[in-house]
Length: 399
Ligand SMILES: Cc1ncc(COP(=O)(O)O)c(C=O)c1O
Image 1: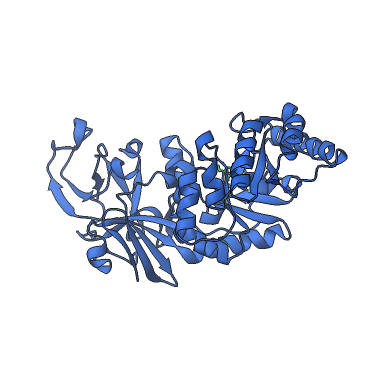
Image 2 (image 1 turned 60 degrees about the vertical axis):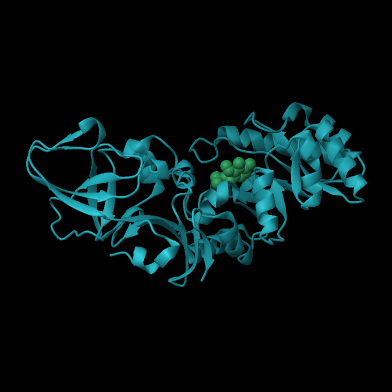
């Protein structure tokens, strides 16, 4: 049986469906990563509200356990951290509009730059405020997302390096395929970055912090470490794929739970859900969970997904609705209304991981965890106690 039910949350969470975040697990994961990295610095990627687990709440633990820097992908995310009083260096790894350069200075952020025009705007803004803008040059070595193409990197960096009130504190690239068995392209990207670094050094340009690695490269490509790695998913307890090495253990930090709100005895020939996708061939017992695809639980799990109740795997039947779905519990006569189901996480000896869900829905674990919506309240647990409830609809409560 799982620990919590709606009555533990009182008026803070009225719907019997929630996400538990185990902050001790986050702390342990970060400690393992830090120990494994040795002297290499750690930038913790906390974009997308900490991959769905809560940026502000998890950053506290991540910073306590040794992250040197935080990574986000938009100004709003960076500003959220600053407004929450977080002082750790924050790198915005996404691009900004020309009119937004002022915020980088105002909120003391570090910003990726890959065009001289953007560097010039940051330089001007910093100069106006008598400050220095800290930038990381983003080099595109094969992702074709943000970044100056590696063949033009030297010229661009030379132009930017001469601008006043600008400090190039970092240089980075990103791997599109570091968590696959075949590392040949990632290795080529490392060679491209090494060449650029060497060429810059020969021209007297020293950039202090070079960083390439995401979770996959952190596990499998120590040659990509340079000065710092950027780890997101692993902080939250998940390896990026089945194909990577696992040199240290990780503890999943996110559990998704809902309570059975209704049990029904249906008759042979009765149908279940939209589209009548389940037709009972005999009398059956079904249970209804009050959570659906509008909560980020994929509709593709209709008829093929499972949940855990009382440590056993229970099948989903019929089509998932926006706010509810159906289980067939005929074979589990002990299951009762009010029982807590685990949609993702551990119950007894069983586990449903984001990888399991992604395997069924044709997705990736990243999407599974970051997709749980804002209708799902987050319950933060430390040392087996609830320390905070974040309910996006009703407001938060520090406990
Ligand atoms: C630029 C950049 N660096 C690092 C990461 C972290 O990746 P991971 O979650 O695989 O560690 C991401 C996430 O996708 C990213 O966009």
